[in-house]
Length: 364
Image 1: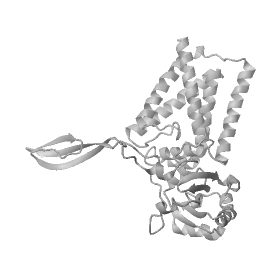
Image 2: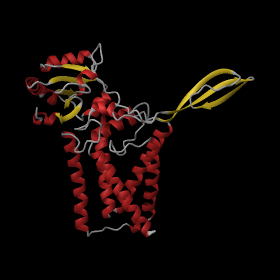
Image 3: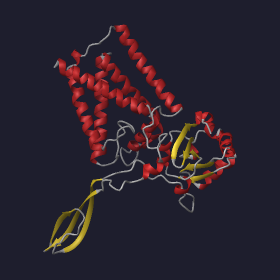
Image 4: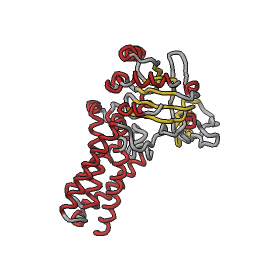
């Protein structure tokens, strides 16, 4: 039992630190995932949506800290009980999501590693077993250092985690795992290779055969059945190749301008997923920055999911000298974790991006 506890201790501790750090690198992204869970389509606890960011920071800091606590043996009872309660909650959440097919990606490892709902649930079940081993073998969890160094390391893990979470919120994620990271090309991210795996679909056909309803399953072809056709249901067995970038578009009221703007050599995009929720201090910085960009030959546009009235209002209020175009809110949130944020493209390749706090530091 002693050796089993130590193995579980290392596995759980390391996994919690890695998982927590990846989400701590992008707490805003994790908060968007929590908003999905809190929504009416999943848990229907929408009153928590305004607090999603605060909850996300608390959860990811706790993940990292508990992982460190476990490895160094700091307050074993508190640590193991906390881990057990967390994993029970996450196991329920991932099972609910998988069984009812509510959320396609749990966000357990942020954008670094995508897991299907059932993969997430399986991972949580394994963790639950490992943590139960720790729970029943808690007497074997001893500090690896004396009291003072153990306390200092525990305190430092908490302080550094909080600092890092605050830092990336005020700037941008230290490591960008998304398809819009600097150096990535948007056209390439949207493309589907000729040899890409095609979706696999299963068709369940229903026929009335001699007064009795019978089902026939095929991979798409119409079954040769001597009976009256009633209906067909389609089930996706394998989604096939899914490009990293989906639903990216730049649209005016009348037309899709995506291809046109992605051919621009010097394109500055001001991303504001929701104009009404944009940080006022950030919007106030846009006039000087975008005017400078225009003088240096940049094509400047705004991307938002807000309506025409909001677009015109922000242009008038802040005397902005560029037009806003329509893009999906979720896509804009993915492009840059800032509202507003700035992105520089050269023929669709992301050359630079910035949080509004650092917008003056972008080289044009």
